[in-house]
Length: 247
Image (tube, rainbow, N blue to C red; front, side, top):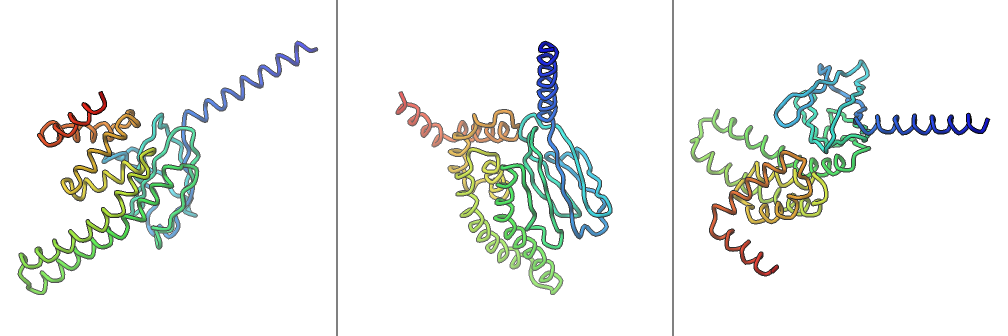
């Protein structure tokens, strides 16, 4: 009898271990989209590639399971609104959004995705400013104003907006070197102003490049920064001096 009980306990332990292993081999994404209008699905992108679509039911609810052995950035697009999530196997992520107020979406179950929401809040104002500049350009052009004068004025405005954004994103990235949200903050700045913060970007990548080696975007961006170092005599001298001091 004792032998049977012992075998039963071993079987249960093996079964539970197998179940936990299965959970670690996938991530789940569940939630709802309110006021989605005519949208009946969520488009899921990895980089520029559409990797899947997630159907919405009549109540705007959805469920999805995927495989991400390493932390991966996915862009969920509903209508024209993108939402950025960083997920990893073993995570059970809950996501809720109202497209009438998309900036106040909710995400739980993924600490890095919660940080990505902070980054979204920082960049939301810049997106609105940029859209307003485009509308102003079109309106003034239709009123017959000189295009070169409009471009000069709006470029000056945009440069001010970039400075405002940089003043918030740079500290955010430095405070989040231990997770990918910081990296994507820095990548956001690079996409907007690739030469405006070279020194900060190079120093940042030197600090984090060994932390996320499995992430293709991190490896690619680190290689780009290394190219800048090799091509610029100032940076070659800087890092040689730093290396000599460590000897």
